[in-house]
Length: 340
Image (cartoon, rainbow, N blue to C red):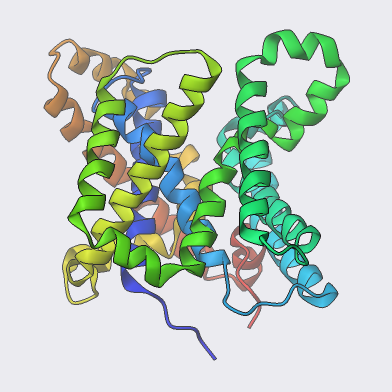
């Protein structure tokens, strides 16, 4: 039986995937991070992506017995890990082994997500008999997230002290585990969804959430661990609550009866395909023209150009994805599509 998809969830996934391509256009094709509001979008882009991943992963009443754990882990390995290494090898070729560090040549997201599944399952099993399981799992989440953030800040000094251990942590993508916080919060939101909806339906809740995000976006950064992590966590939480609530409250805009809804939903059902493919189609050849554009110092012109370039990249990825999926073999090993 085919499970019914939630249209505004697919639409939100589509938007976050577009924002990933948008960011990579700024970084790889403009060689500039602080343009076209990319630094602001950065605060919420990956938190939203991992939040939705956690929300979709949580299943009411799921029992984590040995069979379920084995089935879920093997399925996630096939979907997250196998395609990642195939595309990394295709993209990097001779440079493949030099890209097995934390960010995998850009392919870190799927790798990190697989470990989030593992961490969540292991912590659930370890704490299943605890009276306050949610609270203990939140504590585990914070320890993992803060430790990963701390390691990232102190990487250069620590790497000399722990030697080959830094290579192991690099391969595991430990610094990216900071985002596990948002994945876990996605599972909690799904678990207590009625309460979450009641809270976010109140202006007295949403106005401070929006205000906090805006303040964080405009205030200067502080590199001290406590303030830096607080900025990271609070901006991510407020950003994902804002975006998720917007899509939920205005879900009628994102149905298949509307062009915007159809487009975002289709992108949302092909997020893995686009993520894996888009690195091949980033228009880095336009770098000289993009640098000329920066000379105008017009943020809105930058937004327009980056948006158009990102839309073209997404469209090309969708076409290539459609062609590759015509082969069941390629669909299975490149995008983790289950055999029918």
